[in-house]
Image 1 (spheres, rainbow, N blue to C red):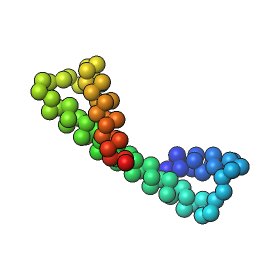
Image 2: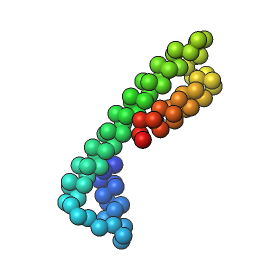
Image 3: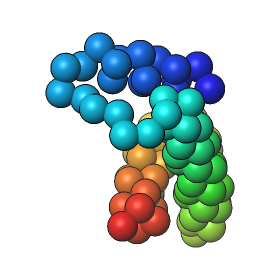
Length: 83
């Protein structure tokens, strides 16, 4: 919730920003958005880990190859889910 307060504080100081709703309502929407993004990232993480685990040969987590695959699959899955 702290991040939503920071965002509203930043926007209040921005001369080009204009509020058409109560800042409290806007903060709540920002919080919901951030919470939803976190849930999406968690789901992507699970899917990516499962994809790496199903490789024909075991790739140990923390290895350079695992990290490369994780980043690659995370980007692919993220692009697919956030269209």
